[in-house]
Image (tube, rainbow, N blue to C red):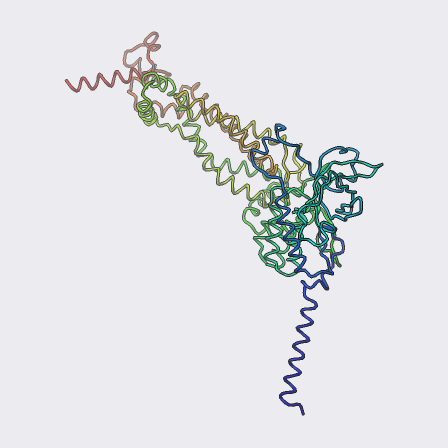
Length: 565
C-alpha cells in the first residue's frame, strides 16, 4: 500500500514533467512554432533560435534603423520640391529593381530585404526576388556592431546606384544599415508568437503609422495583421475596425486594374497565402461596419435607389437639401433684402468713411429696420456641417459596398477621382460667391477678403479631399448643384413677383417701417390710391420713389426739430 510520502513524490514528479513539457513546447523556446509556409523571407522567424534572443536583436536593429530614416517636415519638402539640398534616393522594391534594372540604371535608390554576405559581393533577397550587392568606396555596414555576424542574415536597407551586368541588376551600395521596416515587423511577429497580443498590435501599428514607412509594401501586412489580432485574440471589434479602416484607403489602390499592395493571411488548411489587401479586408470590414448607424443609413438610401450606390448618394443629397430648405429659403430671402438696401449701405459708407465704428452701428441698425441678417448665408452651411460629418462617416463605413461601383466616368466610388474633384471645386467657388452675395459689406477690405476666400477655401478643399472616396465628393457636388437650383428658383420667383406688381417677400420686408406715401409709390395699387387722393399720375408718379438713406435722415432730423419747438 502506498504511503502518503510515496503519493507526494509521485505528484511532485508528475508536476515536474508537465512543467518541462510546457516549457519545451512554449513559443519563445524556438520549437514547434506555427507553420510559416507561404510567408516571404522578411516575415520568417528563425525556428532554431530562442524567440527572446531574436526579439532583443530585432528591437535593437529597429531602434538603430529608425535613426537612418529620412527626416520629414515642411522645410525638407520645400527643398526637395525646388531641387535644393543633396540628391535623395528613390525607394524601390528588390522585385522592381530586378525586373526593371535597365530602366533605372544609374539612379540613386534605396531598397531593403534580407542580406547574405559574400566574399566580393552579397545578395539581397525580398519577396521571392534577389539582386547582387557590391559595397563600394570603402563603405562598411553600419549599425550592426553589437550583432554577432554583423549584417549577414539580417534585415538591411541599402542605398546605392543601380548597374547592370548583362540582364541582371547590380546595386553598388554606398550605405548599408538596419532596415527599420523589416526589423519592426519581426518584433511584432515575435511578440505575436509569444502570445503578447496587446504588445504585438502596438508594434504593428507603430510601424504602419511611421510616415517614412507607411507606403512600403509590408506596412499593409502590419495593418491587416494588427486588425486580425485585435479581432480574434483581443476580441476588440472597435480596435479591429479602426485598423481595417486605416488600411482600406491607402492599400486597396490599383494600377492598370492590378492591385498594388498584397498581404498574407492564414490559409484554410495550413500556412499562409498571399492575397490582395482588398480581398483580405472586404469581408471583415463590411461585417464590422454593418452594425454602425451610419452604414445603415447609407444602406437604406441605396436600397431605396434600387441598389445603386451612386443613386443612393444622390438621393441622400436631395433629401438633406429638402430637409434644410426652410433655412435655405430664409437665407435667400435675406440675400434679396440685403441687395435691396445696397444703395443705402453705400451712402452709409460715404457718410462714415473715417469712422468704422459708427458705420457698423448704422449698418446693423439699417439691417434691423429692414429685417435682414447679413450673416444669414452662414446658417444653412453651419446646420449642414454636422450632417456632412455624419454622412462622411457613413460613406466610409459603407466603403466596401462602394468598391467597384461606377457612375458615369467614375470607375470606382470607393477611390478618389480627380475629374469629380475638379467639378466639385468649381461648384464650391460658385457656392462661396453666392454666400458672399448674401453677406455683403461696404468695407473694401472685407470685400477683398470675401473675394479671396471665395477661391482660397475651394483650393484648400481641393488638396484636402484628394484622398477622399469619390462617393463623398459626389454627395457634396450633388448638394451644391441642388442649392444652385434652389437659388435659381428663388430668383425666378422674385422676378415673377415684380412683373405681377406684387413685391417679393424680401422687398415687402425691406419696406417695413416706411410711411404710407413711400409704400404707395409704385405699381397698380399705388396708381389707384393716387387717383383717389387726387394726386394724378404722369410726372408725379415718376417722382414718387423710396426715400434714400440721406433723405430719411433729413426727415428724421426735421421731425425731431419740430417736436423740440
